[in-house]
Amino acid sequence: MRLLTLHHVTFVRSPSRVMGSSPVKVRGCASCDRSFIMVSEDRRTSGGGERAVVREGLARRRVGDVGFRWRGEDVSRVEAFTDAVFAFAVTLLVVSLEVPKTFDELLVDMRGFFAFAICFALLLAVWYEHYKFFRRYGLRDTPTIWLNSALLFLVLFYVYPLKFVFTLWMNQLLGFSEKEMIESSQVPLLMLVYGAGFIAIQLVFVLMYLRAYSLRHTLELDTHELSVTREETQGYLLNVSVGLASVAIAAFGGSGAVSWAGLVYLLIFPLQTINGRVMGSRRRRKESAQTAAEANTDGEGP
Image (tube, rainbow, N blue to C red):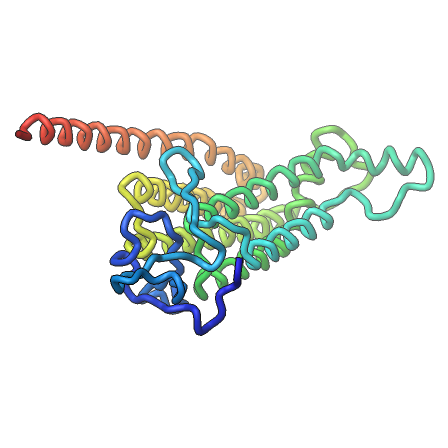
């Protein structure tokens, strides 16, 4: 297949007029005040119409999750760079970069396995949320790139506090501590640092989903997809509220209440469950009402 060069491409201001029912990919400009698609000059119809195509062929509509269409069909350079950064972050989590020379050293290194497993799972969860966002919306505009860069910076910053917190917790839980890793007076500050990183990462996701929502007309989000976008935004805002509660406890609760600064993160699970059920119930009611309205319309037809 011949690659399209610059003189073979036409930028169209109103892609919906030429898309028809074809599942083509719409690309946004950097300023995102308009959209464009790429149309091959030698694929124009004789009647003056234009058959919308993309540089890599017709885009296939795929389902990312139930009822949500994928708009990010291919892996962009931004996503590839993101994967490399996450891989580097996981490397920083490794128990020890030095091969143990004795069995005793191996046993000492293995003590960090549980903390590493938890941290790896949390990083994987962040990566998966990032993956879903780019599969759902396929945004590559300048604001999204800046937000993605901020997310990567925060992930790398977050690695060592994350590893330290869970290593400390697992050592105390399993009795592995041979020496004090931290003084009691320093624990509130540790929770402040951890909470600040957690809040910042959640806020970046909030801004990314708000960016996608602001482009809902360009992305042609349907009712279901708009509801999911709102649900995700609300979910991250709930996480931010939990992080703020933890920071407030660590800052003003004193040494006696500092353990609650960590336990408060357990609220994330019931809050996310409630958010998902409430928004899911609303979607089902709207879909049922829409189905009933369509059935009535069909029944009134000739």
